[in-house]
Length: 119
Image (cartoon, rainbow, N blue to C red; front, side):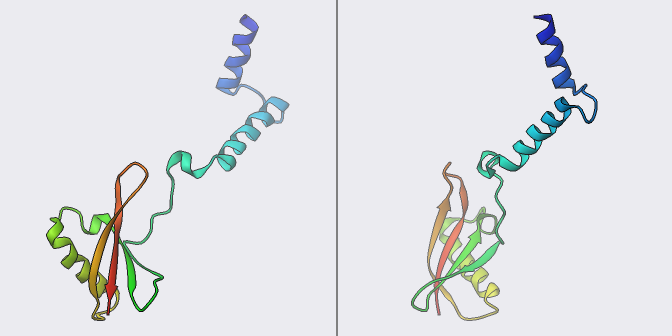
């Protein structure tokens, strides 16, 4: 039992000399963890831009608007603010937002809004 505790202590405190097989195993385990761990385990996802235009059909335009841009606004004012954001993003083109849908993640946290605009 004492031998096992001594070995665990060496592994935890990394007391193996560089170049030994134990050292190489530890490095391989760390590299395996870094490169093989799924990104979803840490909820590490690239953040999109605050506003992005998405592909759409039939002349309509769909925009992703980050939730922080519309945070704190009453629901009645969100549509007009989203329209102003879409117009500034599209360089002053006269776009009218006809629908604004909230987008939630799997834990029901608000991630952003999809703004559906027509010319």
